[in-house]
Structure formats: C-alpha cells, structure tokens
Length: 475
Image (cartoon, rainbow, N blue to C red; front, side):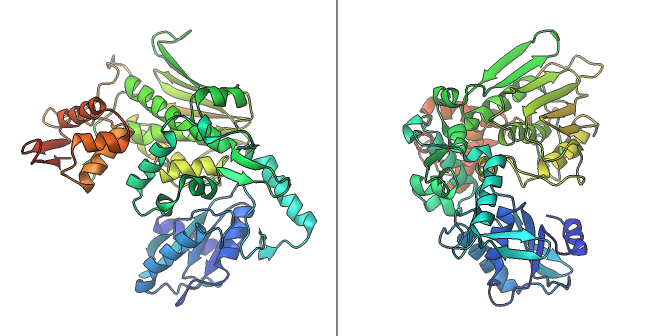
C-alpha cells in the first residue's frame, strides 16, 4: 500500500467498495458490519482514521498495533464473524498521521456478524431481513464460486501424505504470529473455509478447494477428471516440444513442479534491488504460476497450458470472466475466482495482495526482458502473454544467469524447502541437520543436499565444528 493509492481512495470518497471510519480509543462498533457487507457483496477497502467527509484524523500511535491485532483476532473468531475470514490490516503513514488500511476481498461464502447477514450498497451497509433476500445472496455465491462445492465423502485420508502438515509449517515459519498456528487441523479446515456446512441444504463436508489444495492425485482425478496443467518448452521443436510435464497433482505440489520447470528452462538475470540480490525470474513467474493455479475455473474442462517459447511465455486457463478484454495495472478491479484457495497461497507467501501480480509482472519484466508489452486478456479463456528477450540474437544456454560479475556469487533460485532452511537458521543458528530433517519431514540426505547448494551459492557457511558450531547467513 503506497501513499498515492491512499490519496486516490480518499479523493474518490465512500462508495459501494470504500468505507471511512474514525477510530478513537476503541475500534468502531460497526466495523464488522462493513467487513461482513464487503465480504458478501464485491469486496472493498476500509480506512480507519478518516471520517465520512474525508477529514484525516489519524489514530493514536499507541493504538495502531493494538487495533491491528484486534482486527486480525476478531476476523478469525467465528463468534464475531461467521464463517471467519482472516484479515490483515496494514498501518500506513499519510500526511504525518497514522491510518489503518484493511483490504477485504469478496468471499465465496455468505458471512454474518452478530447473527445478522449484511450486504452493501452505495448508501452503506444494510441488514438482510427477508428470506428472499438471504436466499438470493446464497444463489449468487453458489453460481459464482465452484470452490465451495461440498464433497460429503471426502476425508482426510484422501489427502496426499504430509501436505497439510507441510502447508501449516510453511505458514508457521513465514508468519510466526499467525492465528491459524494455534488451531487444530479440524479448526484450521473450518476457519480457512475448506470444510463447511451449507446452511441452505444442511450438506456438510470438505470442499472442492480442500480437494484441490491437498488431495491425492487419484482422488482429484476421480472428482475432477479434466483437471491438468500441461507445461511445455517449444524453443527448438516448435511443432511438438523440447520438454514437457503433465501435472495432475494437488495445487501445493503443482506450484513446486511448475516453478522447478521454470528454473530448469529459463535463465535468471543478475539484479540488485537496493543492496539485495533478487531473482527476477522468480519475481515474475511466481505471479504467473500462482495466478493460473488460484484463479482457474475448475468446473470447466478446458486444460491449463504453460508454454515457454523463444520469445514469450504463453498461458491459457479456464476462466469465469467478470470483465472482458485486456487488463493493465490500474485499469481493472481485481476479482478472486477462488478466494479460499487464494487465501492459503497468500498465507504461505506464494502470492501477494490481490491485484499486485499484474503490477509485479509489468514492473520486473521491464528489467528482465526490457519490455512491458505483457498481455493479460480476460475472457472465457484467460490468456497470459509474457514477452521474452533473453534469447534474442544469441544462443544463451538454458539455466545460465545473465550479466553476472565474476566476483559475485550466482543468484541461485531457492525452492520452498531451501527458503524454510534459511528461515530456520535465522531463528536458530545452532540448529543441526537432523533437527531440520525432522522439522520438514524429509530425510537427512535431502537436507544435506540443500545445505550443500546453499553453501556453494555462498548464501550460508558453517562456523566451527559440527557439534559446537553454528550457521552464518552470508547473503
């Protein structure tokens, strides 16, 4: 969130997706009425510390952190917001005053607060009193969001071994103070919207989003037989392919496979952001990969494709459009196709705030390929075209970083486990390999292999003996 966007929100004023609220010694009493209404309608943005007339009052310094924690905890409390939907408020400074910004995406479920269902109009929040109104909102949600489909005979035994524990450990490492970290698995499923009860029908069970995120390949194939991601390289052999993988596993593992495919076939480019080396390739393609997995319409049989050509990467994805045509930064309103799947990816650090993906691709591909002619075309099939100029007029070997000074270590892209190792070392520099293997539920050889790669890349080093020494992060 930057100051320009805050300025734009304040200038446009309150409306169907923007709300201002003063915040004195405590949170506004009607805050969660607005949260509930935004979740039920089309999402929105709340600024605390601004009044209805756009006057900026700010929030007392000693209250900002307290308010943010209260908002996060209350949004995760089913007695306050049901079903719960975790919010992550941000503290921002504007005109020398502290404000709190809350982004609320549209939800695929119907929410209530104080045992009442709220909806949103340009005039503000209003209670749905009649059965007809409530029925209509349920119908609208069920039509728009297939991820909420309940599978009554889907059980935890149908999930891939260890995938739920792995997801929860990644969230725990990435967000140590996350309120989900203290929940049991059953509470986690319900809080994350992956297990639900349909109030209209009484049907109860795990949802399609849970199946896609965690399911065994054969279970997903049984319920959604048309689901697959076809990843190809067509640089030399345009008619067929140079390399290909066909992915039918759950989305957590699919993300890893696609990112490994990108690492294998696209070179990286040395780049400093400030004094930190970053992987432009990862910055760009984590957005592309997350987008095609999170926002696909999974009831549509059109297959997902991810194709690397010499001059571009092209992706096609089944879609349920909310607008048509080309999307550019600033000219569209982001709309989550599968909010619960998106929320899991966001809490794992694999995707960012809704709408930032397109911005990041434009920003970083300008540096990576010296072009911003990226295309995101929304229709019944969502098409992504990312131009590449890294191979132009040269025969650059695949997977070789470009423009790397000889005295600078290679910017080696790290997989999820290697990032977790670095996080573990930051937390405890004396952690030993056996402890990491047990923590990440992999064998010792795998951890040793990752450690060697990190050492060879000059990212970490061992100081002292194996027993009495410690790890040091170099870069």
